[in-house]
Image (cartoon, rainbow, N blue to C red; front, side, top):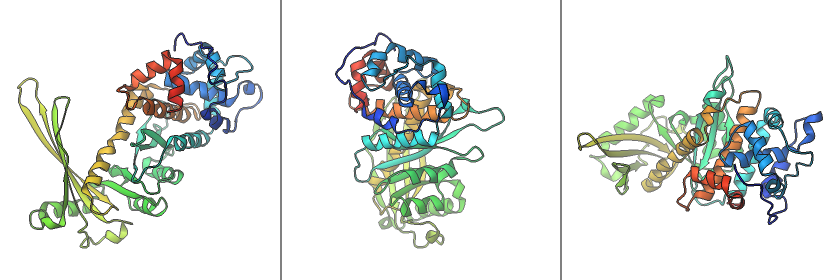
Length: 388
């Protein structure tokens, strides 16, 4: 966040993201209206992109980069904001409005491609729990092909991610996409919503939360692949060598589910798949390779195309990588904001910052921390990141 009181005027006009932020109604009253809502949100977003995430850092960033921010539409006509100005706004602002802005910016950045894979998963904000309350849980939708967060919704205080996923799906344009959810989301109502309301396809992980179905599908693969190999389509990945391990993945998929009694209760159910991951890890002490094998089951509305299912299950881990970035790079688990709407609003700002940084760094052989350092030390690159 150093040495960047730039006086360049190469973009002395309102930025498209600023235009989106200006559309958010301001919830404040009286003396708190001294600084425009959009100005504060834009400064907070850029500060998080530079690697600093606290109310005091937001105020300091605005002070150091005042001229640069003015060149992008932040007037700060009444002087520089204090940390209390940022805190008051993020406490009061309706999270639904900021979340809508995030989705609109994501749609601006998103170029729809056929069969886009959208991974849905939840993440806890561990240190934002209020005394006597529950840890806030935020469900995210991650578009791996574009490297951006499509949207996020906070789970209800007295519920879990299962109730939040349907609300998130209703907010997104998913027509023609493939939605992947882990075993917690393997529910009949979610399958129906994806194929019915969203007009999309699904690949849902199947585990013991659907114990009877899991046992029957496992018996199908274990008992019939040898006796009826023509029922199953197969796809195998190339062996991957990375970080001292060798890993290969194989997917078998079949539409032979007419015998399954409950198939009509699962809207759109067309096939089941099994993914087998074989991994060999080099033990540094013994010098021997330790081999493991894991099998995972999935149900899907897709026709038999094991290569596509294998790609979908693999890309679902993109949302896990996004959660890792939020925890390790952005320090979300260390954020103690918990008053009113501050935890959810700051989480939304982080996800928008992550989206912009990730899209810029792709193809540049640049890590997320390197992208943050570039944003902090090189003001000209911030414009490239904002337009990525």
